Image (tube, rainbow, N blue to C red; front, top):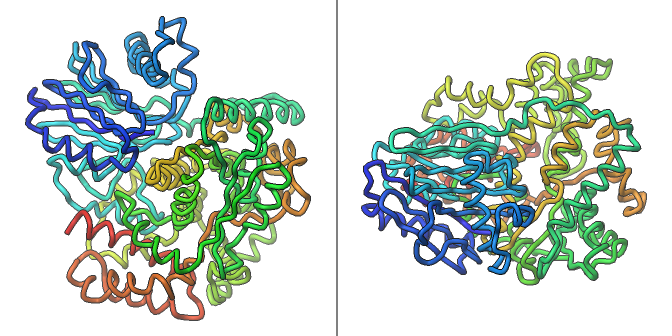
Amino acid sequence: MSGITGIFSFNGAAQQYETAFKQSLASIATRGNQSQKTCALEKCALGEQSFTASLPQNCPEERYHVVFDGEFYNFQSYADELHINTTQPEDEQKLETLRKLYDRHSHDIVKKIDGFFAIAIYDTQNHTLFIARDFVGGKPLFFAKTSDFFCFASELNAVLSYPVPRTLNQTALFCYLQLQYVPAPETMIAEVQKLEAGHFVYVTQHTVEKKQFHNILERPPQTTLSYGEAKTQFENLFETAVQKRIEQTPKLGGFLSGGIDSSVVCGVAARSVKHLPTFSIGFAENAYFDETKYALQMAKRIGSEHTSIQVSPGECADYISKILDTFDEPFADSSAIAMYIVSEKVKQHCNVALSGDGADELFFGYRKHAAHLRLLTPSVSNSVLKLMRPLLQTLPQSRNSKLFDAFRKANRYAQALSLSNAEAYWKLCTLQTEAQAQTFMKGNYDAETYAHIKNHYCAQLNGDISLNDISRADQYLVLTCDMTTKSDRMSVRHGLDVRTPFLDYSMIAFANSLPEDYKIHNGVRKRIVKDVYASFFPADLLNRPKHGFEVPLHTWCNGILREQIDTLLSKQTIEEQHVFNWEHIAQLRAKLQSKNPGDSATQIWALLSFQTWWKKFMC
C-alpha cells in the first residue's frame, strides 16, 4: 500500500521541478507515511510513499525504475522463469519481477499482474515513461500534461503540487451534481485527468499516448456450464481468491456487516484463520441505520471474534470535518462516512481487512438491477406505474423511513419507464436530472464533452440489451469511479489495506460469463452466491432485504451538520463564490426542513463536499 508520484520533463531538466516534486511526495504521505523513497534522474523523477517503499534510497544502476501502488499476488509464479533472487526481501522480489516483466513484455506487463495496482516505469535507455491502472480501478492515478512536462500522482492534490493551472471543470461539476462523484477521465480541475481503469499512458520526448488494454464493457462468451457445475466452479474460484488475500498476512481482520457479501468473505476466511477478528459499525440512537445485530449473529455462526462499533452523534460530529477534508476532489457517496470511521477503528487491531465489495456489481445485488430487469420486461405493472407517475410525485419521499423511501424508489422507477435503456441506466445511477443539476450552476458545462462522457459509459446500452450489459456498465462506472474510490481513500488515510476477493480477476471473468438467471432468479438477487453459501446463514438473514452501508444523513443535516451548512452554504458564501445559484441552494435548504425532503440531505452533503474542496484547493 503506497502512493506514487512522478514528473517527466520534455526539455530534459527534471531537476528544475525538484521543489514541486518533493511537495507532491509529501502531499501523499497519508497514503503510507512510514517510508519515503525517491529516484531523480535527468529527465524523470519518481517517488513513492509506502509502509514498505519498493524504491532504493538512491537510484540503482538499473535500466528500469519502478514505482508501484497496490498488490501483486502472483509475483512468485515468475520466480524461476525470470531468475528472481528469492533470498531477498519480498518487496525487492516484486520490484525485480516488475522490471524483468517489463523488459520482456513491455506494455503487456499489465496483463501479467494479478492484483490491483497503479504503476509507473521509467526506461533510462529509451527515455520513456509508462503509467498504468488495473482494469478494476483498485488504485487511483491522475495525470497532467503541459508543453514542458508530464506529471502523475495517486491523488489530485499531489498533481496540483506541480505547476499545473487550476481551472474549475464545469462539465465535471455537472456530472458530479448528478452522480455524486466525478467519472473518469474527468476531474474537477480542467487541466488534470484521471486515468481510466484498464488504460495506460506511454510518454516519450515528443508524444503522450493513452491506450485501453482491457474493455470490461465487451460482451464475453457465455459459459456452457450447467447451474450445478457453475456453483462448483464459483466456490473453487472464490475460495482461491480469498486464500491468496490471506496467505502470510499478519493482523488480518474483516468487515462484517451481516449482509450477504461480507458474511461470505469472512465465513470463508474464518475456515483458515482461527478467531478471525471481524468488525461492524452502527449508529447509536438511530436503529434504522444500525445492522450490528445481524453482524453479531453472523459472527457467532462463522466463529469470528466480533467487535460492534457503536458511534454516537457526538462522535460523528467530531469526524465530519476530517471526512470532508479527506477527499482530493469532491465525492459525496455518504457511505464513505461509515467507511472512514470503521477503517480508523479496525486499524487499531488489524493491518489488513477483507471486504465484500464488488459482489453487487458482479451478481446483480442492487435493487436497481431488479428494477432494470422489470424495465426490460414489458408488463401490466409497468403500464400502471407509468400512469401513476403524477400521483407518485406528490407522495412524501425520504431515505429516512421505509415507507417514504419506497415512495422515492417507485417515483424514480416510474420516471425511468419513459426513457430509453441508456437513459434509464443513467437515470438510476444519478441523484438529479440534467435539468435539475443545471439549475444549481452559474457556469455552463461543455455539452459536447458531457455527451462524450455519457456515451462512454452508456453507448453499449442502446438497442437490444440484457441485464449482463447493465452489470458490466456498473463495473466500469459505479465500481471503478465510486466504490473503489470510497474504499481506497477512506482506508489509506488510516494505513489500512482493504482486500476484495470478489474483485479477483478470475471472479470477474467468471461472473461476466454467467447467464442472467444464474445471478437473479424469481426475484432472488445474487442467486449463485446465496446458493453456494446458504449454510452460512440463518434463513432470516439469507433473505432479508438489502440495506447498504448507509448513514442517517437527514438526521445529521438537521443536527451535527448544521454549522457546516450555515457556513458553507450561506447566501454570502454562495454569492461571493460565483459557482452556484443562491436561489436554488435556498430552495434546497428549505426542502430539507419540509415534510417531503426527498433526496435533499444527499444533495446538501454533495454540496458540502464540493465547498470544502473548493475552499481548500481553489480559494
